[in-house]
Every structure is written in C-alpha cells, then in structure tokens.
Amino acid sequence: MASLQASNFLASSSSPSKQIHAAISVPKLPSIRFSVPKVPTKSLSVELNTRDGFINTIPFQKNVTGNGIPPVQESSSASMATVQLYAILESVIDRVEMHNNVGQQRENWNALLLNSINMITLTAATMAGVTATGGAGISVLGLKLASTLLFSAATGMLVMMNKIQPSQLVEEQRNATRLFKQLQGQIETLLAIGSPSKEEVKDAMEKVLALDKAYPLPLLGVMLEKFPESLEPAVWWPKTQTQKTNKQKHSNGKVESNGWTEELELEMRQVVEVIKRKDSEDYERLGNKALKMNKVLAASGPLLTGIAALGSAFMGPSNGPWAAIMAAVAGALASAVNTFEHGGQVGMVFEMYRNNAGFFKLVQESIESTLSESDLGERENGELFEMKVALQLGRSLSQLRDLAKKPSYSCIDGSPIDEFASKLF
Image 1 (tube, rainbow, N blue to C red):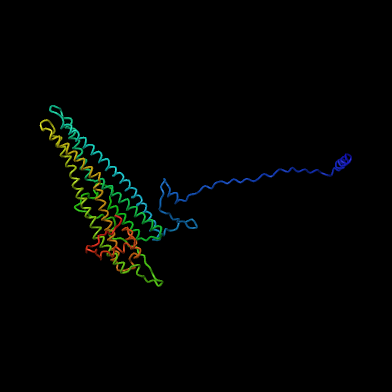
Image 2 (image 1 turned 60 degrees about the vertical axis):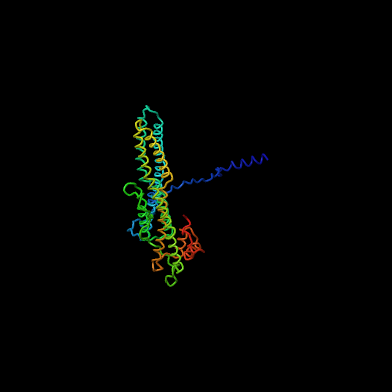
C-alpha cells in the first residue's frame, strides 16, 4: 500500500505539464431586504383643512387637468349648493357651542346673584334685629349705617336682576341650543341624501337668521322683553318655509295623489282644531298666569328692600324699636320673595310656556300651509307628513287618527271629550 502511494506521487510530480487547480467555496449569505416606511404625503386640500389644528368640513375639489394646467372654474349649481350647505353647517355648529356656553354662564349668574342678594339682605336684617333689642344709651350708629348700606345695595342688585331675569335667559339659551342642534341634523340629512338644491340652501340660511332673531345673545339693545303685556308665542322659523316635494309618478310621468286623500285632509284639519281649542289655549292661559306672578314678585322684592333701607335709616333711640323692627321684617320678607322668584325660576316657567305655545303655533301653521297648496304634487308626501305630525305630538298613527275623530263625538252627558293633541308636554 505504501509503495502504491509512492508511485502515484512520483507519477504526478514527474508530469510538469499538468497544473493543480484549487477552488475555495465560500458559504452563500442570505439576502436581507430593508423596508423603508413610506412617508405619507398630504395634498394641498388636506393640509389646508387641518392647518392650525382645525378641521374644515368644506370639501375641496381638485381642479387640475391631465396636463397639469388648472382648468377654468366651472362649478355646477348642485356642487356649489353642497359647499354652501357645508358653510352653513359650520356656522350652525358654532352657534350651538356659543348658546351652550352663554347658557351655562347665565345659569351661574342666577345662582350667584340669588345667594349674594339673600346673604346681604339677611345680614342687614340681622343687624336691624340686634338694634331693636338694644337698650337705651347703646350706640347704634355703626349698625344703622351698615344695615342701610346693605339694604340699599340689595335694592339696586334686585332691580337689575329682576330686569334681566337670569333664569329666563338660561331657558332661552337652552331652547336656542336645542333648535340649532335640530337644524344641524336637518342639514346633515340633506348632505347625506345628496344633491341639495339652491332652494334648500336658501331655506337653511333663513332658518339660521330666524333663530338668531328669536334668541339673541347680547343683553343690551336686543334682549327679549321680559314683562310683555301678555304672552306671545315664540317664533323661531321664517315666515315662508320651503316645502319639500316628494312626488310619486307613474311610468308615463303623471303625478299621483302624492299620498293625500280626503280622509287625510279632514284628519289634519281636525288636528288643527284640537290644537287651537286645547293645547294652544291652555298654554297661553298658564303662561299669562306665570307672567302676572312674575310681575308681582319682581316689583315686591325691591319694594321690600327699599322699605327696609328706610326703616334702618331711621333706627335710633328717638324713634324707638319700631323702625328697626320694620327694617328686620321687611328684609326677611324680601329674602323670601327673592328666593321664591329666582330660586323657583318663575321667569324660566314663563319662557317654557312661551316656547311651548310657539311649538303648537308652528305645527298649526305647518299643517295649514300644506293644506292651502291646491296642487297635490307640490305638497309634501301625505303619508310622510302624517307621520311627522304624529311624532311631533307624541302619538302613533292610529292614535292620531283616533284623535281626529274624537272632536265630532261627545261623552254620555253631552260634554265634549277633554283631550289634548300633544302627549309630550
């Protein structure tokens, strides 16, 4: 074996023409790919919409052609109406926030002024009572001046508070917030359905302006009259409202009855009569009672504190204890009257009745204006209109139809059936 290996080695070394080729094999490394995250690029419209942390709800349209040249701006009436509705929607949302904030502020006014005036009045009445218990020779000059100043300050503050009626102002802002939210929902529904018209844009604009007029934010100059001669229902809708048309057509293009029948028209007229005879009349009667009560309380509070201020000014040994007793009793009564008026929020109750009367007036005018349209195709769909009226009055369709039949009937003893149209309030 050793001789065989030696002979092979000599044979290989003896052939110089042969070359030895050697190759080194390196192991192949696995390929690794690095994924670089793609930076999101915002378009100019998105950047403008989100600048300074605000989100703009008005959509931007790309006005760039294939060759990069911006075309001549030609916007259709439908797209322009959509943009205008978005602009109105932003204003409505802003007004909702404003009326909500102002309402909270004026609610704080009512609580703070009520507590402050009562503390001032009771402190002055206590000073007057202490003076009345004092014997002869005791100096009452300090108590006399302090109670007189406190009663005078309470009188001035009560006059101002009764003039503006903070609880009534709060109720105004609550109703304004609710109605603006309702208008916001209507506009969002129009945008969700798509393709709004110029008439709907005009109608939304008129509703915003009517609400601004019905529920003003400032106090000076445009504040609503807090003590009118009698209750006038609130009006927060424009005089002329655009009615939506929901036409039903045959295949030949002719308009059907649009959901209206003679029975439905008679039903709506009966509902109007019930609203006039029961709901509107009752809320106007209760509103006038609340108004008279508020007038009496608003005049009694400052009158009592003024009497207390005069009584405390004449306190002294020469006048005896009667002046001090009069001041203490008048101050205590003024505090009770102020608590009943503003703590019980009588002004808010009057405003609530005024808005409820306005609601029934709106339902009544809506039905009458719809029935006054002779062309059935131009009316709102009858079935849809009946459902809306039933929901506004808190009734089902069957209950609404039963209500329309009841005014023509009587009870066993001959007296008319006593039932209100609304079941909500």
